[in-house]
Length: 417
Image (cartoon, rainbow, N blue to C red; front, side, top):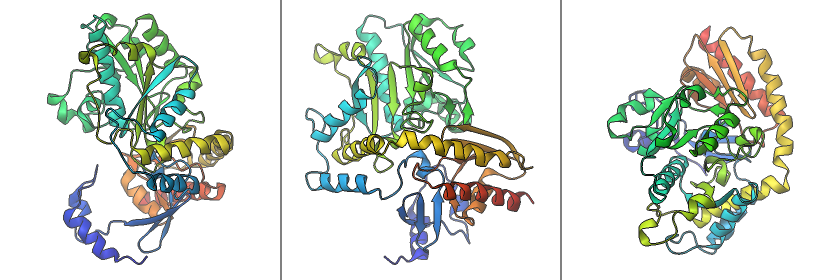
């Protein structure tokens, strides 16, 4: 299909409003926003026919590549039945099947209940409301405080934003947020009165928006032990790390941790459709049984959407049948090897890697400038301030992975010369 690129750019600049985008630059004279129109595998194509490697998996969502035949077929088949029906007081086949399959990924009798929603923020929101309401139902109304970590990012809705520990994103909304407690490390948590705490929330192994900052090994397991001994819920945010990003299906598996709540999104549908899930225990679920006043007062119009659930079921089938995690181990090792020479680049101050996630700190140029320059070498990604994120789809080839690193290297030379 032939597109009029300039016409589309003008329409967007006149009427669009993009997330985390400064529009004085986007709409400036001479600005030509990239208009992405097609994709296949690890590649994206713009309306001018230029190809790029999707170096951040379309904001950390796409797992198996664009236009994957299995996921495409699952969505088309569901379209021939129905696209969406209410989940309030009804259920549907793909939603029921997805809940069962997600629960089956965990040890028996641990995370047994699944609440479906729309995105990472809402997956966190529902965990917060479940935890708060649980303590109300069980006669412990003093447990109202939530603890999060400095540098945390758990989403942009007001509840999730309250947990955020990055002032640039969250500080301006402080007057409308609930008073979450932010701690630097586990030692600070131990100084708090646990009898007032509803839950502790953490991104396991690695903090994403903090610049791909790694937690010390063993920290997550120690946090689980502290929460258990103090009867404080542990909410794990695996919106970014879930579904293989760290080399295991879930990051918390690396330290044999099972949380009380886990928030899943992004890769849940394979990067196709908005879908999220919050899993929790039978203990939590049981506190909501009884009269109408014990109902969970939370829900969205598109909860349990059939198209999203069909995509997610296909995504999980691909993991099982194509042995994705097994093959991913070699690609993680390949990425590690490719990044070694880049560490000695004069404009690189640090590189951190966790599975198939890499954060490259640059100096002498802004991260945004480096990412724009990398486009000319066939790579699309976004920075977190001056940290370049490399998080490609799992289908990427070794040659494409090498091209990603070369593109960053060339972009660094061009922007810091």
